[in-house]
Length: 600
Image (cartoon, rainbow, N blue to C red; front, side, top):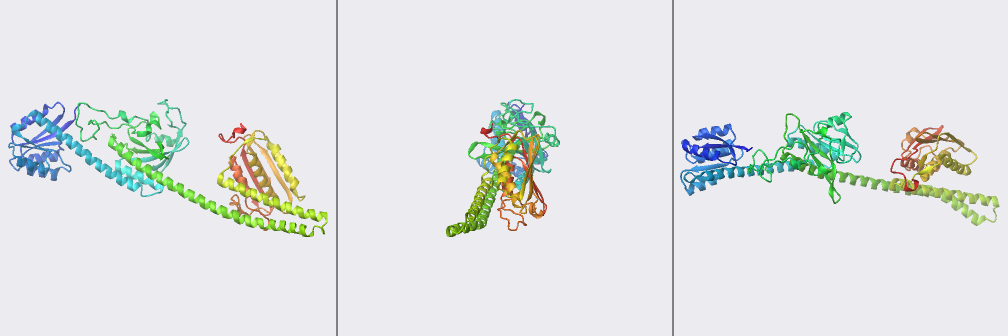
């Protein structure tokens, strides 16, 4: 079906108007709605009443000249220029030049006018008018997009960028709602910005294999059970190839100005579903979310030089009041905004990464400073003891009996072991905090493992401390990293012994459950003030009541890091003067993907 164009003939000669009408109605390529006026005033009235695509204007009219009428039409009636073809009975070149200078599109002499000449002139006028309209529309679109992009990229705060984007796009497209939907690395997605409603979280269902279209197909599917997903039903829609939307009309070589010009010159149909661009191979959404109310484009970030971009999320325009036919121009504008939004998001993320790196560097510098301070302080006392004992042995070994010599040698050995442990703890904390060591779980017999460690402690602990081992439940089927488990036990047990200076019993309870192993160490020592308990799991943090008891403040930090690598939990309860209880809960089977090759 041919598009119908509105054409106005302003000529005081009825016979001429009849000829022009007959010529134009015989045009096989176009369909016209023809209006007629026999004077300038009647022509102005018709122009005010109805938008005309082309005007055929006689140079000589009874109430004013054609040039005067042309000026009034351009200045008073139409905001954009309308193609005017001037008709005259005289082939005067001076008149032709004057007419063309005023802005008329063409100049025809009535005596030489034929059917083919008139039809071709009108078709060319319409085509040129469409091209001009498309150019103006494109320029305006680019201006709006540039303004929108400038506002979006004025901030480096991601939340502010997204909020600005949805507000600007809503104004740009004159739609009811705009949202930004962000994909997560796992199967969850989230609405991170909305032009009218608070942020909402939407769960995405399991990934399914491509090719099962209509059954929740594609790389991503959407669940329908929860309230938020039902809300998304009105927002997200199924995949539809954009290339199938434009429909060429070979019998209509001239585009209607109400539609954007397609490369073939044919008017494309409105976009009914989703304008995917590069989204088509990344995401499929369920058929039940199919709605004409939405226009969706991907937000693609550059991928470190990789030609395949990283799909960050979706930019979605929603309009549901009445039937809205999204046009290709709407889709292209939304896509261009998504490109600018992607640049802004990437800049914001890069800034966040830089700030995080600077914070990490600052943390590292503080950590190094704490290490130097701690080593300087903790090494001085044992080194002084070692030096004094060694000096005494060197100078007075002949005057000392064997028992005294052994006592001095014992001091040297004890202080050397302390310093060695201090170095080991420093290296371990450095590894745990900065390098994140590999977690290498294997099957561990917890009963035998902790029994051996307790025996080692009993060999070194004095007579004032009694170590009690209590066991309940099933301890089989546990997988863990033996090295980390040893560090957890040694640091917790040494703390219990060290901060029980008056001696007493220290209980170690091992409790086996179906899916986890729990153990706790209970002492009757000095306890920890409530105000200090919150920060005790941080490196170099010590309680305020330790007095002269030596220590680095690393034991609990090492224990906590080891527990977290096991995906476990550690808690502490304490009262000053009553003692401290530290409880560790560890899953028997470590999370999938953490098993080392040697353990399988």
